[in-house]
Length: 308
Image (cartoon, rainbow, N blue to C red; front, side, top):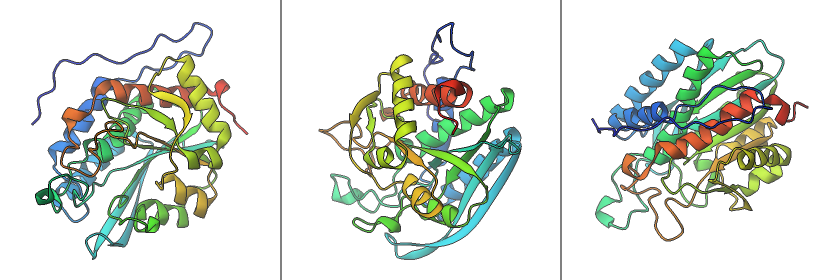
């Protein structure tokens, strides 16, 4: 078990003129990140994958109004073998006319094929940032939404089989979100936000280019709110176009979707992505707190977000 130093609860003092919203607990979210990593790599077919599936199900069933599990099979282009995948959907206020989706992938990559050491190429990654960080925020949101009922329908979706693809073959990635988009278990989803690689200690979140095309209104609203809330990781510049779980949602289900992602992990000069260095020591509760705080604002401060 990795020991956690005493951490502070990331909170923001909202302006008195704004709606009172719950506070996102970054210490609790980071604990969820650590607990996932304690299962080891979570690549499909592994013991860690099975244990983490049960872990997410236990937590979401305790907190959500209802939980849906989508089972599917897929071919791992990286491993050249078939696996079973599991999308998990935790629903809050499912009867609301307005339904939104906040998602993250919970699987990890089976090979550290971006590592500088060739001896590590065929080792699975731990995925503290690329996998556990987005899930940690979703799990903390589930706990928060259980205590603070939202007025709109919130669907927290844990996508599987995102990270077993190969370069230049986009749809070898994101198998879970492709299956979800083609077999929607939820009707009338207004829009979607994907959280991926949001735990980096040096968190920097430019606007992902596809997101700007898919849902420019929500992008503008979120980054404007981040500035007003002093969430400094959010940068008002347009970055790379990235194939992530938001792309199948838009392409196959016509859901206006965006991606909140820090692809340069940890920065432009080093790379921990798809390496054995993707560990909790390179992540922080403060980073989870910035993204989690914005998600809470998005759910509860609806007057600042389009409801069309």
